[in-house]
Length: 292
Image (cartoon, rainbow, N blue to C red; front, top):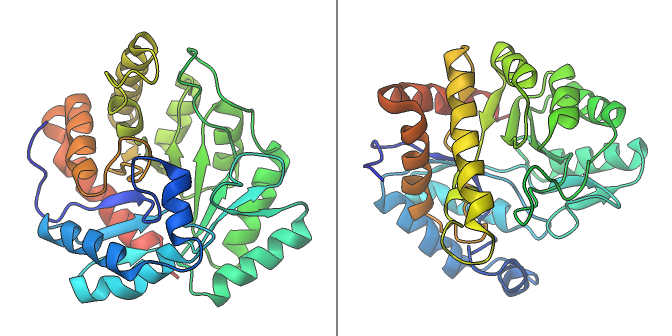
């Protein structure tokens, strides 16, 4: 899909996941992070001349351990410690949950105490790849999204949100969120607002494109969705917005290291010769913003 420019990073990975089966991957490091595995992945990233990684976090300390080791490989590694989700909603498989704002504040304090660089919030469901234009759930109430982002900002954290659909994305934009991850099924008005806000959008196209042909989901759903997301990426950039390269490495069929090349390919298909400048500007923004 094309050659990745030297030193272009991946703005969305999960070191704990392996791109094959998330439960087995988590179980293998549930008791403690596996340094051998983490080191092998970091070495591979470095061999590929990747010097910046932003992890989405996990509840077992794997991303934090990767952050500790990454300096040995000359990799600038950022972690939120763990994703935070509202109990009863998406995120329980990998994150830490809260039921009210008092519990949420306690989780923010934990992120700070363990050296998290930013806050990761799970505010919406997943794409339902078996059915067009469908999410697995609507997500967190908009007022709570706004409050949660504001509280994190008050503590000095940048905030990335796992979000799909207009309602949660607009609530996040209301609170001046720092990055939107995934962002499926957004209408033009929301995309225009996203572009105007200069909030970083990391569309993780590999999580769609790398499924094509695998037989797990209908290609009749996947191909149009990928094309639609690429068109929306073009729209946001044409309106002055910020698009970042983040593959969601560790998700199904999104393999660490290789996924940077995959994601770069999908984004250059969308953006053409403007891709390199757009993606490097976004990485510069992420390096500056997602740190305490």
